[in-house]
Image 1 (spheres, rainbow, N blue to C red):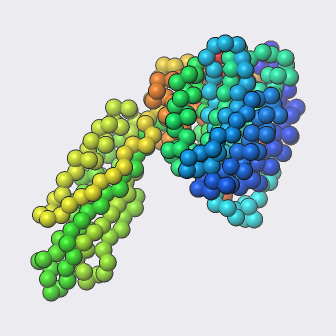
Image 2: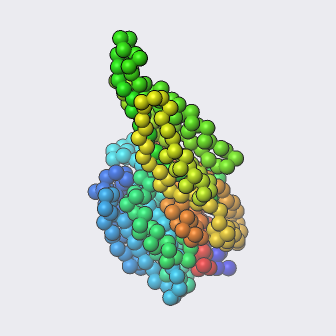
Image 3: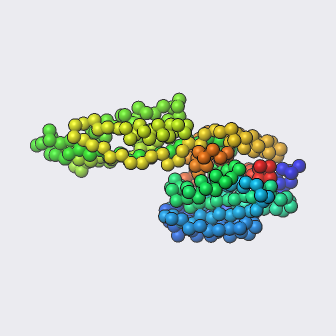
Length: 378
Ligand SMILES: [Zn+2]
């Protein structure tokens, strides 16, 4: 009965949610522009304050401002809602990708990842308030400005809030089939530089130490670490080296992406990378980097959150499935602390990080209803 009431209320206000989403998508907020993300933070803060939250704008150390919004509940541990208002879209994207409604979808920079997610949460809380239901727990929503840059700036605050929380609900987009995300791989990046010795490729070939050849040996060693069964992948994604075709190169550098499924493998892969040793006599290696986001494992607490979401969805005819994905989010950080974390509670759609990014309108209200139900049942 409650779920039907929530759905009815949210469906009746769907058009307002769409208008708000179009407005938010028109506020450009690329991660690397602190002024732009801070401008978006102000819009988020105003929207949440209008819905009764105590709102604080928290300046970032390097990147733009974050928003912390608190709705009081009883004295128990809060539920933490995680969001971000930065996007990957550079300033100037709007003329070629204007926010718009087409074919039952809302298009625009950052629509799916993840401005719609924050609006869904705000709508959920508004619906709870309109139904006159008290929140059983305080709800804290944190919207960060550097998620797309791996959250170096916001990580301490995310972790501090998560440690105090009963559960973390991540408002990142749903998977492409609408699935919630119960596991995510951990992500690391490394920069490995091979240093050799330059020489004339014709006149003094034997005096050179070819840094590109050295790097080629290291690439083979790294590629051999990929183990699909174990959920470990290593990909050399960028490479550069040398100064001229007729010079034995003195330096070459690569950037490496690693993904791991299990927490134990996060430490293991770092150890493997740092254990690389030069292959050629007189060559040397410089290695930096590490695992920035630990994997989000499918923990029992996470499964319980998923089961709750599924049960609430069933009450209103929304069939929610779960999925393990390769990409990381801030949910990785909170799950690694052992806090039950359910991800992908935001909007359905597709095309994240491209100009084709969109949100599907039809599931917006049911998904907001599930969010509201979770806040009332946790
Ligand atoms: Zn995102």
